Image 1 (cartoon, rainbow over the protein chains, first blue to last red):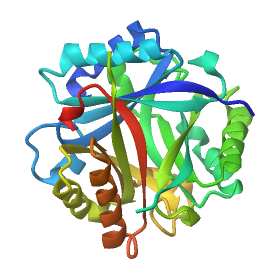
Image 2: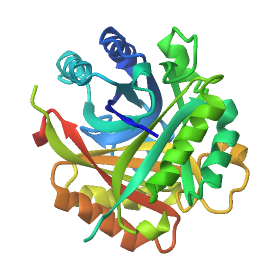
Image 3: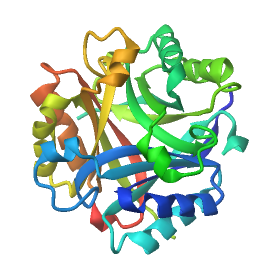
Length: 106
Length: 106
Length: 106
């Protein structure tokens, strides 16, 4: 079985800006993305939450992941999310190399 | 502290086939798996969802992750999920190398 | 665009110990973490669940991820979670190298 490298971009940020983040992802030419509910603390999540229990009960963050074949597009998404949102909203983004079966799908 | 390489397989697909996917994972000899609720768009998630808000409110996808020591077993899971389900259901799968403390556990 | 390596620590374990795990993460000097609801089977998740449907409906596990610049701190979190909890509670932990834009944030 031949696997091919692809780039995973993960963005964890506030739920209220999910629409804008997804527009950035689509504009970069990604073929899709996955959204999950999340909570957190510090720069990784929502601000000013000191009670872990509260974080778990009310997930007000989202974790969005995108698999994309072209590294330049992946970096473009990351950069645009940073410049557009991460001055005003809590959030982190990271990139990871993964392996996929059908690279043309991404 | 000595860490050991292991393979993570991630499968993101429609909730309705989760049972079959988990059977493939168990048949391959994985010692366990983790399931999370997810939504999405395009080939990464459910089809025909154009409103991001709707995606977040009703998560009809799942993200399943498996850590497995043997790369062959990891690839077997990936291949079998592709051939069994990904012609008829939306879904993606990818593989990633991670590091674990007790490889014999996986 | 220059990206910098950072370490991602993922801990998947029972919800009831999330507070203690987060205290270990904060004590190690991480700037934040992300928590998601999860279910599972085997050593990756809660014990004694044989029905996949039940796993999905009642997520009693959590998936916690931390991005941290310093590998020693990442390993310290992993080791402490293992020694403090993983004899008595179901759980797994793994480490992965990712790429971030502003390493000083983590």
